[in-house]
Length: 122
Image 1 (cartoon, one colour):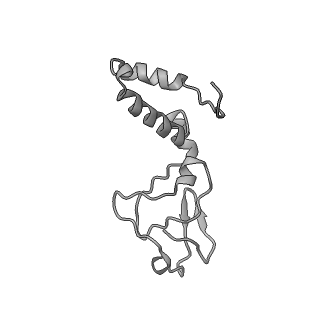
Image 2 (cartoon, helix red, strand yellow):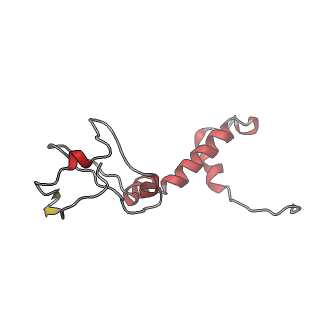
């Protein structure tokens, strides 16, 4: 993972190349190996543009999961899906909800509305 490149990128169809004289290995902050993933939360959770480059040192297949592709696959943002999963986990530990199946808990969580209350409001 390289924070900045000194030369412009060259594109050829779906492929993007770094200049041959660019020394990406010495400027790399992280070197990823097979099966590893990398990313920053704002990029995936909030759709912020990538702040660093992932540069392949040899022929590999990289899979980029973007904010928009995550929303298309999950039907909601990752932060909302994570929040709903946290709520489901908490509800499933409460006695009142223990007899509900996962589909019923899912419906309950989707119908919850967030409220803000000031001191003394009831």
